[in-house]
Image (tube, helix red, strand yellow):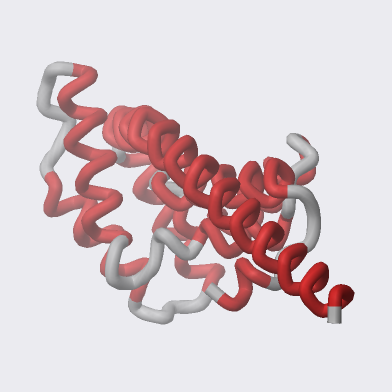
Length: 162
């Protein structure tokens, strides 16, 4: 919460960065979350620090649930069985075990090559889930930042009156 309070810029700029970060966090692109969020924030002229904070929606406590949700939504959209959730869980656990980034990339690429349809379905599921997540993050963050700025303006006005 303190990091959000320290972000600089207008509420839209910060909220858009947060929305981008949350959107990317929901997608099954774990070794690339931060890079993707920063690149998208740059592209859309949004707060890069807010995007980085938003990426932390995906963390060791939530990533398994997010990936399984992406898998299930992708499966529902494609209407046929592409694999099972155990493969997704194995990938996530392997990525979380603190292995070097080079090995993470190797696992990710191997999963991509061997499970292309599943990978595609998970990413589509991630986009479908990420859009409402990003919208909610945008609205909540923009309102929060506006409220903070109003409180700050009131405090500075009260100090001037003294």
